[in-house]
Length: 212
Image (cartoon, helix red, strand yellow):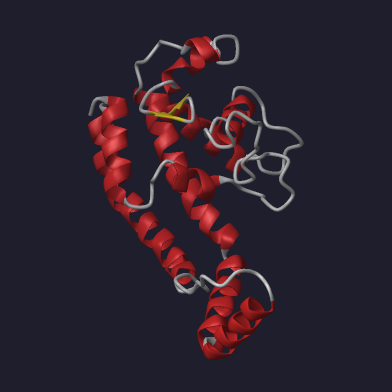
């Protein structure tokens, strides 16, 4: 394969299959959503009575939602595995075909010159998309390592804190907090953040980053 276009065309069917698999897992989670207790009654005895009646009236729907949540949680690492495969394919394309040599000012000293090729694409939480792909791929591949190397660790720090919430306070997003004991791989969380939930968004970003 001589060009980025060759690479993207040759991996198209595989990536589409991966996104179909990803959607099949997410469809289970979607079954658990859409049921919410809404009331204008203030907290107190009347509110509690109303909520109890709502739970009884919606018992079957609530049970199905809990069942769907349990089934989804049992497959979270499988979902991460598919998302990690998408990130691997994207990272390899950037490694081979990106010609970028510019490093953003805020990442100077963290990103080595050889890694500048990943500093491409739209910015998400103050980090170029290509570098997010690089970091997320590394985390997923090396999830059993004691610590994530730079610049990947700094990328996740940005993802966890550069979200604009909290009125300037330091609120850490648990979906990207590397110290979160409940997460093994962050591949699904990252692909959700960058809105890679179907092939069309993936290929749009890849062609933009590679000029393909």
